[in-house]
Amino acid sequence: MPRRTIELKAPVPAELAPELSSKIFFVSEAITDFRLLFDGEAVAAVELEFSAGSSAESLAEQLHHVVEADILSQRSPAAKVLWEHPASAPVQEDVYRELLGRRIVAEVGEGQISLGSPLLELMDMLDERFAAIVRELGGRQRRYPTLIGTQTLHRCGYFSSFPQFVMFVTRLHTDSNEYRKFAEYAAGRESIGDGLAEHFGNADYCLPPTMCYHTFHEMEGTRLEGAGTVVSSRGKSFRHESRYHRTLERLWDFSIREIVFLGDREFVRSKRGELMNATMRLVESLDLPARLVVANDPFFGGPRTGEQIWSQRMLEMKYELRLDIEGGRDLAAGSFNLHETFFGDTFDITVESGENAYTGCVGFGLERFAYAFVCRHGIDPDKWPAEIYKSAS
Amino acid sequence: MADDIIAIRSFVAAGVGGAEVADDQDIFAGGYVNSLFAVQLVMWLERQFGIFAQGTDLDLGNFLSVERICAFVAAKRAAADTAAVSSLR
Image (cartoon, rainbow over all chains, first blue to last red; front, side, top):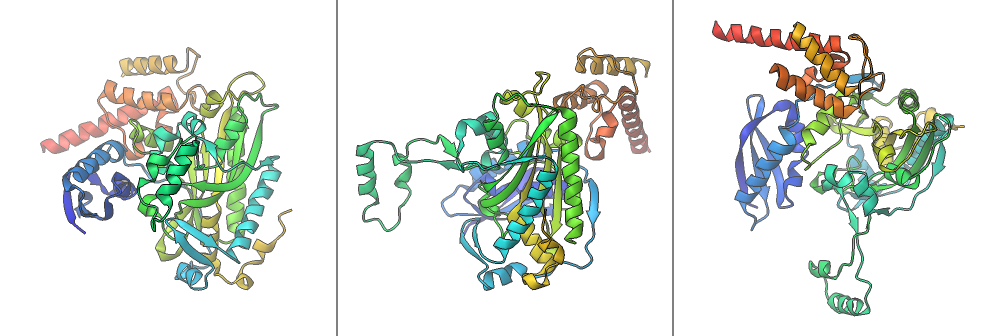
């Protein structure tokens, strides 16, 4: 594979280096590997490895654009830790390798992993604990279809904020001639090939990147009673994570337990706080090494990326629960978010006074939570703490 | 400084839609303003007072009230003056 070192037009400060690393594979599919080259405290250049036949010049141009628009427009965010739980023992190593070796997980595609016992039971037990918290908050459960309307995601602002993650669902043109042509195209081919796209019909639906958009869409035009309401759902979510997929940490296809709050400002803020407190108690009882930090969403590609990130952090609209895993890493297993009245405005969801509702949501990544749990407590259920088996009544 | 506080009061008053707010009143806790205003406020302060906010500057505590904003601007200017003097030595 060819390699090229691209000197950056302006150095990227060290504190933004993780942000840069998290975007390079989204610069182009042609990039197969990369390395940041530091000069003192800042990234001065990026060494790219890319597929043969790609133009190093155009990759450099794209990289410069991303660095300027999406990285340097950020303002070196200050780290802020709100809470920490140091576990009574360190996490274990080689856990993922053991999961693979014992066929508890199998890598079946890019960012796609099949799971078996005892991870499945663990995910269900963890989810039941989250569901119990929802019940304590007076929430109700919903189950949504997998497909979400492309127009719904558009109204949610998803395409201008996170275009890199979108996964469209398509189908063939509804036309007997097309079916015939497609059948002819497919017949006798060993590999289905790149000629598929010309047979596709529309992209009216997407795979959902998270559950809360279903909730807002379903509640369009609703006038809420009392101070507000809590709605929770569990479902599969999908994000195109490019080459960033890794173990159970970052999947293209994963499970979320999501809790949405809709109501007046005070209701939404207090519910987020109650859920954060309940989560911290749960993490302590499971003795998982963890911290709660101010965070931001992975905005990308929009004209206001930098602004969106620093304002989200400044106003503490997003907190992440980060759990330690093997290899000295941690991952975000939960997030606690406020949206002001954006979704109330967009979907005409109002409170009793007639004003548009505030909303917030909390999401837990079940595979991530389970992975962090087995990193701490091991794969053998007999050695898991009794707390995980406690009935969450 | 007197001109500064007048300008800041005026910007904040426009942001809260004419509601009366005391200099020490938390405009964010009261729900008077949204995140868009926070962005506009920081950008305006930078243009108006020739300062640049980043890292720990971007703490909401610096922008909660007219008083806090004035203190933040004064501190940024003092830091810039100190840096300028140091560079002359």
